[in-house]
Image 1 (tube, rainbow, N blue to C red):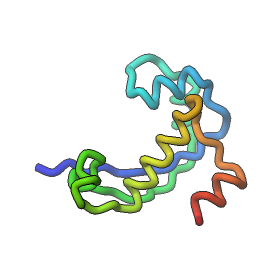
Image 2 (cartoon, rainbow, N blue to C red; image 1 turned 90 degrees about the horizontal axis):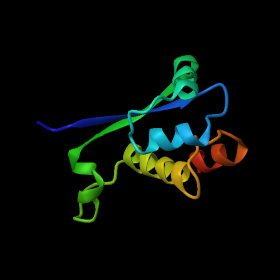
Image 3 (cartoon, rainbow, N blue to C red; image 1 turned 180 degrees about the vertical axis):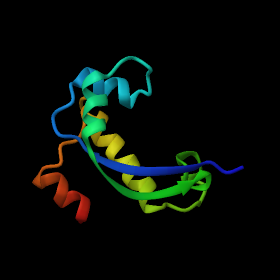
Length: 99
């Protein structure tokens, strides 16, 4: 059965500490109280979904690049390089998202 992935953007009401962002991006089970509270209070925007055929190990084999998967990969990149963070929705990020 094909796995379906969904991408939702969460606008949390305040900054997330780098140590909690690191825990989140590395898929760890350690506690993240600030992030958890931020996500509880966040506004969410559904972006899209994709299936196994769009997963990174298949992208170089000629498979499709769906927009939601590309956005997920880009947000992961800017959330982890050069430091772990929850990307801030500022004027620069808004411009990058809509261009």
